[in-house]
Amino acid sequence: MNLETYETNEKLNYAPEIFYSGSKFTTRPTLINGHSDFNDSKGYYFIHIHDHIAYRYQIIKILGKGAFGNVVLAFDHKLIELKAIKIIRDEARFNRQVVKEIEILNLMTNENGNTSNIIDLLSTFIFRGHTCLVFPYLGSDIYSKYMRDKRFKFFEDETKYIIREVLISLDFLKKHNIIHCDLKPENILIYKGKDISKTKDQCIITNKTKITLIDFGSSILGNPKKMLTYIQSRWYRGPEVILGGIEDHNVSTSIDMWSLGCIVYEFLIGKALFNGKTEADQIYLYNKLLGYPEKTETLSRLKYFFYNSRFDSNLLSSQKILHTKLCEDFDNNMKPYPLAKKFIMDCLTWGPNDRLTPEEGLKHQWLKS
Image 1: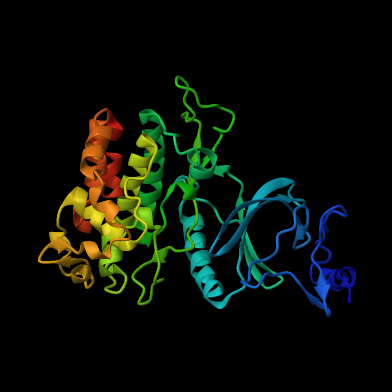
Image 2: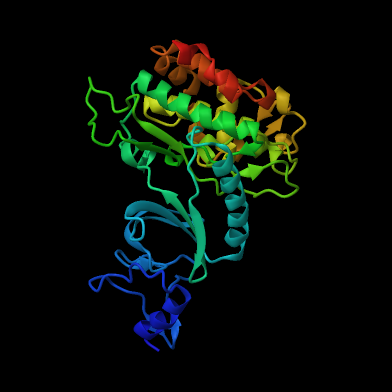
């Protein structure tokens, strides 16, 4: 059976909702011994530009790829508009996790009234064994659009605008007992700023710029008995996550505020605050800036990293990290931004209960200035 015959039979499941069947000029999937070569060995769906998804969407380009699968920009031939489609890997653990992601997204879509700067889930479906999530296309993520240029940094007013919009999202999440668990520049979309170029005297961000929080694939709703063993990207990972918070079920929405503090620094200075290669590197850097974590002494992995309140430097990925001038660099870099520095330090506390909440963050002196 060739692909044409396969799709003729497949279309019976979609008729009469056939809007697009793929371009004759694009590379198409192949069939081997009557079976489709739609996936690679890791369960990722093979992406072919201008091929169809579910005989409705035309793949335009790949927007991103992660452990979960791919996100593509697609043209919806039924509604004549662009969409972003997340195609989940065909693997048991991701198929289980996406059920929770959809539950959280549906809750937020029903509750936020389009006022919380959170991506709306439009629909879901199964295509060739892959769960697909359809979202409105709302521009590029901040990292891909701007921060791949390692010298890039935002003006302070631009940073304040973005952070204020993200805090609105985090405040909504906290009120609904949802932890994002992967807050970082890659998961913040920026829209309507794409036609403005960056110069020394020109802002990218305006009061018409739309900021949207995305990617709830690792998010936690309520207080589940089981969590993912890996949450938060390393450079933005809350200390309690590393020190045993997952095993101890001792994580909260405060971990997102830790991430936000790291993001503020990165937007203003143009580089990550804590850029360790391992979790041990991260804890060492946190300790260097904040001192010994006395308020986390009940966490189960604290003694793995510290002995008699001293960090075990043998755990570091490289002894060069011992010569890092983190405190000096932080103070010098933040001299032009004293109120932003205060905001960052209010987010970066060992004790989760000592951190700013999103509601407090929105009232912070820095954002009011």
